[in-house]
Length: 267
Image (cartoon, rainbow, N blue to C red; front, top):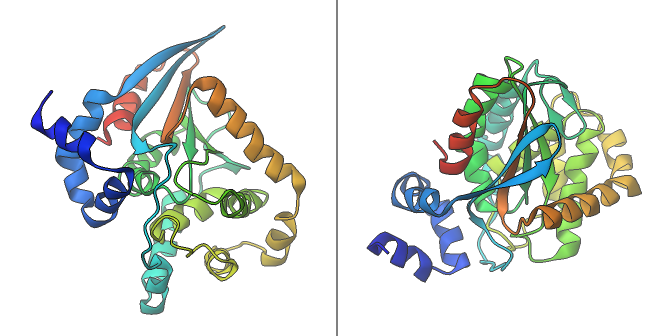
């Protein structure tokens, strides 16, 4: 085992989360390379579809929080509005349906299991997702389905509230704008920044979102049931960390291996 791997194992979950916020570029180096070496894939026997389970260095089932300030304060300087414009431009013109982004019948599908407070999900969203969207989702080669998996969020009630808020935006086909903006403005996990005010301000930044309908949709019990079914699907697949991905292909998709590499190594 290398010194890098020894150092990585010595880090607690909280320390790794701190590095994810403080040193995102460092994560592109030694820590990500270590993550790639530890990444594993497991075939899932589903008739007619070739599926690989991809797990990467991530927020694990042990949830260690840190008491730090929220990124939502950045809105006061205009950073929040800038992020909203960036998210809107990235997703403009791409079909959405509920939690799904992209053409409904592409050759490749990725299920993205995430926790909105997971700092590694934030890194994936900011560093990898844009290239996936521009190179594969926008041309109709790939669709991505967002699914909820509680890992980083310590309080189950808070997890339910934040994930339902995202799913409620999905009722207006705005889930991807909501989660992308959430990750842009994400605070320190379990620092208490996810409040009604925080969620409302995110929703207010989404162009075209009907706030009254969004608020009403958050009381839809079907959305809570979706979170439960996502957890069941994750458990059946053996997923215990976020971000995690299930990748499936139908027909010829020679670029699927490239997508796998992007998911495994943030490359």
